[in-house]
Length: 245
Image 1 (cartoon, rainbow, N blue to C red):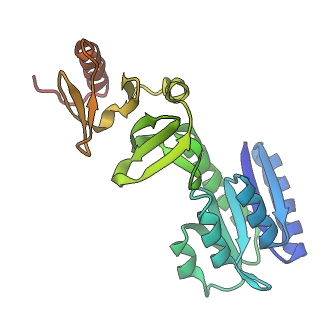
Image 2 (image 1 turned 60 degrees about the vertical axis):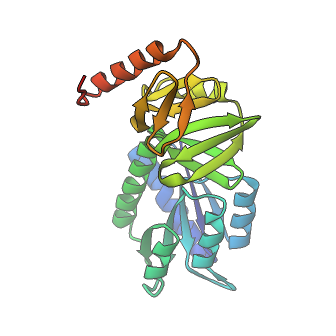
């Protein structure tokens, strides 16, 4: 199900988007739920409470508020929502992309262009949902693309997610639970009770440790090397990667 929000001080615009979304939902047979906000303060309050949206239509110019600044605040809690700015002027187009805008939609909103935009945004959402996980972590709500998750370790009751590029996210949780959630993805291996690794990022495998691409050493328990080596080589061969013995 796709969750959509839209925020505009103009009630006629809120009504117009509601009508367009209802038409789109019926014509495309899409499972969509949406919430309208007349004030950015209402929107921010809900996001701070943990509301997660897939797509957000956000007016740029509102009384006492600038949509760009509102988007900056939203990004502190949610880096994944696709923000589509609504405006009658292209004045803020460049600034909009500085806060990770998905699109900059000029008013008036025509049904044909709205449907094309929704097709594109929902297609991206569905791709991300298939190969990603959503975390409620210390820094807010974040979507992690599994292809960019190098490895995860547990420290006490804290899961530490190490992402490509050195980014780190933390949340309270169980590695057992995470492992069961990711078992369907063949690239994840659990060589140690405290680590879950993405085999795409393995640089070297020895009797004592796995060396990741970022040079982190992950210990291999005594007597487990052959088991993990076989799993890794099977994965490599299935991916048709070149292996020189």
